[in-house]
Length: 314
Ligand SMILES: [Zn+2]
Image 1 (cartoon, helix red, strand yellow):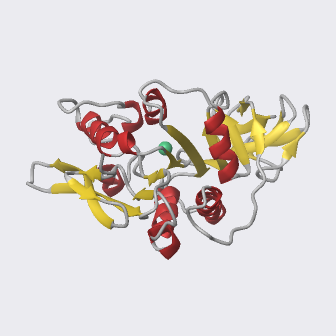
Image 2 (tube, helix red, strand yellow):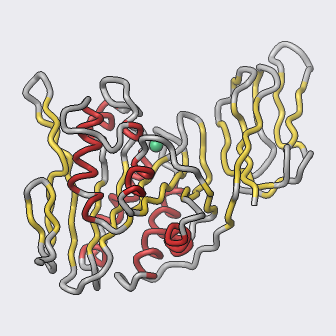
């Protein structure tokens, strides 16, 4: 059987590179929104690897990571196998600078999708049908939400040996054991035997240089470990986290942390405080356990119950 990658009706053979269209969405103004994907194939057989971003329209760090990969000649001429880049999966939400689709749906809860479903469901279907079905594995780039800053981390299923191997080759600062979520790309891809690792770095609507460089370096390390490229990239060292726990605001007020992002914190040590704008009252926040500070809420004004500091436990 001929080794061909077909996306949006366009066939890409070994040794070829092509810009293809993953999906077309049409709007009432006759505007057609096209979702570009880029395919780079070596003549030599090897893994088919996907790097995609922008599943949530306001998560820009991943878009910048995939854009940086798209500029590189070594990525565009892999020594073996194929690289598929999708800088922005959810182009519509990117245009609107929103997380969700125009109908309010989270695209990452629309998988596996259907041809006759909502716009999100159709887009999910096209991604599964056009790309996921043809790859071996991939990385899906995300960030924390508004004001929630995630220290660079890969989320994967540690029970799956291949997941852990791929994550270890990517070598981000933290690898997190994360259960599959219903109707997510990661879960639906796993059902088809495709490994999708989810990278989280930084917060939405804001570039974070450290997360971007960790994301780029991780992709280079992963491709280098597969002997697909010869990039010179510094070695990564990952800490594996089994679980995470949020510390929430005990009272409303103004919040700040005294800890360095990514640092180890000891159980019962002070990791932040909430002050009242109207009194001298100061509420101290303590770590529930030993662990690493992998998520911080950068919102200075918080309400009781808000998630403030996320500790990852080894
Ligand atoms: Zn996201």
